[in-house]
Amino acid sequence: MSAAALTSHFHLAFDPFGKLIVTLADGSQHVGAVVARAFPIAAPEQSISIVSAEGKELAWIEHLNDLPAHERDVVTQALQGREFMPEILRLDGVNSFSTPSVWRVQTTRGSTQLVLKGEEDIRRLSANRLIVADAHGVQFLIRDLPSLDRHTRKLLDRFL
Image (tube, rainbow, N blue to C red; front, side):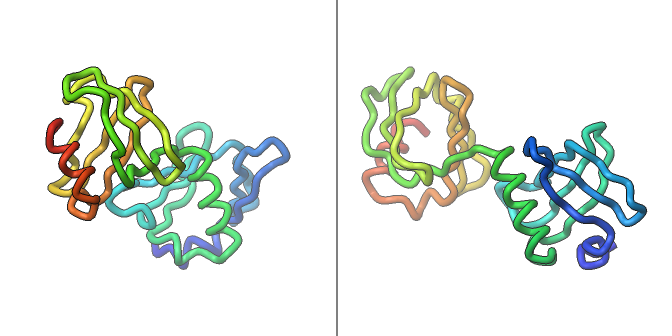
């Protein structure tokens, strides 16, 4: 079933407590539903599932842009509340080239510091994409390694 067909089969809203409510075409309501991306890094706008609090899939969205504006806004808001993966834009410096080390970084969420426990906490997803996990379990995405500035790439090369 296409996403366009699915959109007429459900309505999305938040209750006063911020829980997602899915109302299906048969009138049944599911409070506390969860929105999840199948491929959050490779295809963040595609393949999105809406699952009930009990774990049953209620709806499948092929592409976020296929949804009407209201449902798209609700899905986007639900995803933002669930996901937290800042993207590293620049590496300003490191305190040591041995681990553990403290990295000063600029991210899509502002400047911060992260503690890299070991090189194994840098995971290569593809030739150009990395995930860096800090000591507190926060994951940082490096979306496109070659597009980073020369200073950042030079520092990262010491750890890769």
